Amino acid sequence: MNRKKLQKLTDSLTKNCKHFNKFEVKCLINLFYNLVGDVTERQGVVVGLDRNAFRNILHMTFGMTDDMIMDRVFRGFDKDNDGYITVSEWVYGLSVFLRGTLEEKMKYCFAVFDLNGDGFISKEEMFHMLKNSLLKQPSEEDPDEGIKDLVEITLRKMDHDHDGKLSFADYERAVREETLLLEAFGPCLPDPKSQKEFEAQVFKDPNEFNEV
Image 1 (tube, rainbow, N blue to C red):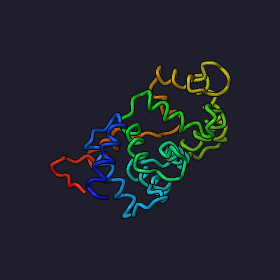
Image 2 (cartoon, one colour):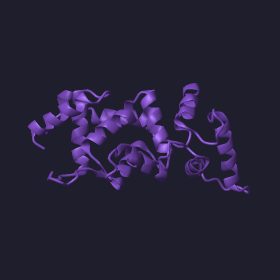
Image 3 (cartoon, helix red, strand yellow):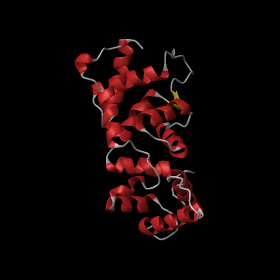
Image 4 (cartoon, helix red, strand yellow):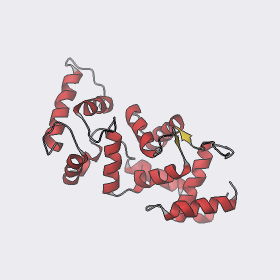
């Protein structure tokens, strides 16, 4: 990408991006094109990270291991649902993922946990996510029974209108009362250590930064 085009893209994304400054946006754009590889932008061809490339980043950089959650995080970034994360989806997605407000992170996490996108987190969805994210431990008991109990306990704590499923209002109220419940059904945000390492690596000192 030539300098003029990069400058224009940086300005446009910085204007609409709440949590990154111009220098940081430029670093993220450069990283994106490094990850995508040397692709020639042609009319009608989507330049972006596919599901596997993105899951690889989530796994290698942010230590995520849960396939179901990683898949949902991909969908959270891929706003137009075309199977690729474009440069703008990458920057805006990372803005919430790394530095979002509690409000933004609640909306993001809820969308990740609402597996079928119907606006609720159902008992079945909780069961699948908890079964996936809990460590498999050999025991005499039926593990599914333990997970069903956990779902019931979670509902008692979070389902304020007692309709057997979580709406965003239920979830928001529970998280505002107890922030640890933000990732109640699986880790879908970076832990502070990997966030710090990622930012330190990507947002290098401007004096060391070579423009493309």
